[in-house]
Image (cartoon, rainbow, N blue to C red; front, side):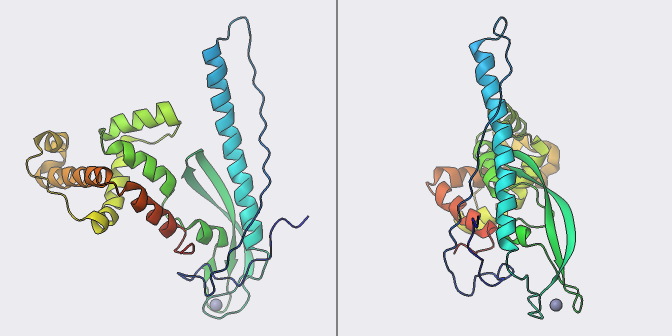
Amino acid sequence: MQVFPTPAAAWPLLRQAPTVMPTPVTIPIEITFHLNLDLETATFYDLQREVRREARQALLRALRTALGEVEKALLAGPILCPACQAPMRSRGRTMRRIVTVFGSVALRRARYGCAPCGTVRRPLDEWIGLDEGTEVTAAVREQVLYLSADLPYERAADVLRHVAGIGISGRQIQRLLEAESEHIEAAIGQAEADGEAPLRRRFRRAGRDGATAGAARVLQLRKLKTSGLWDQYWAHRFRQEGGGRRG
Ligand SMILES: [Zn+2]
């Protein structure tokens, strides 16, 4: 059964598809799981907790399956070297871990090499659009930073773990905000950190300059959240993560 149409030319390395054509796909996913309960001791709370835990695992499996199908479609045509325009050769698979809204997933994605010029491509990486060395997907960054606008990093990490089942540390959240800040500033401009004593106290261990910079980043995040531009900002960031492919 052919689930996917054959993809167009291998364009993912370009910032924009040469001809932006809709590529509709249908990926059938079946989600099933089993619950193991002892009705003598288990409560309705236990039942809900079990459903949530098993459902999350099933969603993660579904995501992995879907990514496998996406990669299959991406590899259906020849993978061309962007420099030589020659078909590249398969060079096995390498592992990469990414953090999604359903949890952490290890991807073994296909790698292609061009012998004459040494170019390497990983078509699935190009489609996902996540920079090399970045683990946390934009969908997770959005949720993490939404909370971090109002909560200290450690508290935000705690809420994420407790409510959303996303395992991330306060330190990791701080680094995410540092990385996101330039984009937020480009979108809404700088926020003035003066006169925010409680915020500066929160950052005092970072030293005077560090405290000011840290407080400024959180203020900027709050400004974005209260500006009414949050959804618009992230819609733009999600498209950027896709390498600009989705226009
Ligand atoms: Zn080449």
